[in-house]
Image 1 (tube, rainbow, N blue to C red):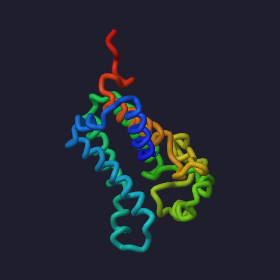
Image 2: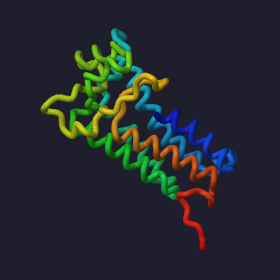
Image 3: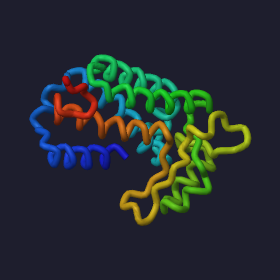
Length: 193
C-alpha cells in the first residue's frame, strides 16, 4: 500500500506543479529512524515466512520485543517531524495497528477467508499453524474491525489484505508527499486571504 501511495503521490504532485527537490527539506536524520521502524516490521513479516532455520526461529522468539522497538522508532520518527500535519494521519494509522496487535497477543488478526483471494496459499498455512505474525479472526478476536480485513485482489496488480490502519497510513503517506512537494500550495497548508 505504501509503494502505491508514494508513486501515485509523486506523479500527482508533479502534475500539480510540485517539486521533487522539496523532499530534501525532510529531517532525514530522524526520518531514517521512522523508515527503520517500518523496515523492521517488513523484516518480521519476511522472516515469519521462513521455516526451519534455527536463527530465524530464535529471532521470532522475540517478536513482541521487536514489534515494540519498531513502533517506538516509528513514533519517534513521526514526532520529530510532526511539523507536517499529514504525519498525524500516519500516527493514527500506526496507533490503530499497534492497538489491535497488542490486544491480540502481538499478532495481527486477519480474515482467513480472504487469503485465497490474494493467491498466497502459504500465508493461510502459516496463519493456521501459528508461524505467522497473523492470527485468524474468530469470535474471540479483540477489535476485529481493525484487523486485516480489506482485500485488494484481481484486477488490483499487487494483491493484498490490509487493515484500516494500513489504509490510513497509506493515505497519510500520500498527503505527506503532496504537502512536501507543493509546499505552501499544498491543500494541507492554509492559504492567506
